[in-house]
Image 1: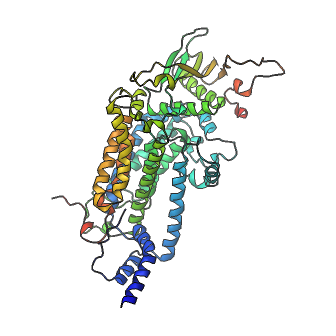
Image 2: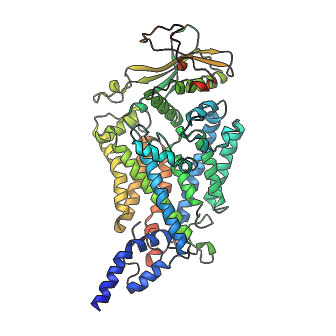
Length: 235
Length: 314
């Protein structure tokens, strides 16, 4: 993008000025307007890319991005969690599996998707699951689990339960043991599936076993725990 | 005499940034400057849409892996300040597999037309619309290649360079005459790509794995590379991690110096190869190369003078 200083060698300075200013056939007012638009545009692009990871951006950046939504979103400049660093040590990128249980009462779970062997789309979806977990958004995880279950049932796979399991990064970070995947599994989300078919599916998320508050009529189950298909008001 | 030259120098120093800005953005260029980039972006966009044929209908239709209700939830539909009203994908209205295939088909045809130089600005515009249609349906699943290619196609709407497949200039071809819009489109792609690389480096440096040399090993553990598991403590993995960090920096530094612009392009080629091999993302690697063609040395040189001649074949 640098210009060679010798491009107009041999010309008087005044001629160089004149040729540079009048080089474009576009009128001055148009160039001025375009210049302002270009500065605005690339400042917005820089802000969007710099704010790619919503977990660490400032409140000011958040506010400005919100003002700029009518420009950034329709044109596709605004993105979230785009994998610009290719790989990171953040919690959202831990190896994650989708596991299913095929029969009532069965205790064995079998993997449906493993992010370490799946396509980039599955890896992106599992990154999204990791982000939801860090934001404690069980509704979002319920919806993803519901969509996966419905698709799997429609393709002929019997499902009674579904869960997202992440392999703890701390356990896999032993530098002396290369490429090991034998970490500690942590269940991010688990749900029981009540199904009469792919179009009539209900997910009942399993609450964590450490829950100590008893469920009574005076203390109902939270909305997230009973999230079912179509319950948009739970958001 | 001295007073006149001093005044001229003062005038020059005051106006120099404005003149440089004017030359950078608005000095007319011949279409072949952009032809190579248009062909490269069209080719990679064609591959991207070819990949969509195997992915999008399975994922983005009403009963797909990322079904309609999930899509609406994640754009924040119905919630204030989420900007969901600006998501204009037709796949929210028509979500059958046929509608998804239609977006893929439109994008494939438009990308091929962009590659071949058919349809002038309409071709990249349609390819961009098709790509954005799929993007707005599932923005959380956007890949780096999609984001880069969408930007490239968007800027090609300003000008597509030569209107033919060949990148060599023909004296009788009117489209090879200098145009300001060619400069504008080329510069937009260049600046966008430089911004992208800069923010990628900044993003990489936020994470420990790029500092302690384990990033490439981590990629291999997550099954993303093409050469199997790499021990975290190995010299190879650590050297490759540092190389992947240094190559884009080297490219940016070299592009800022006229004498080393070819080295800058070579550095980005090496980085793209590393992305393909270690991150296993071939489309992203190709998209990097496609946009990097806008920074080939001849695109950075003046439009007039002996260095402005296009590459000639014998």
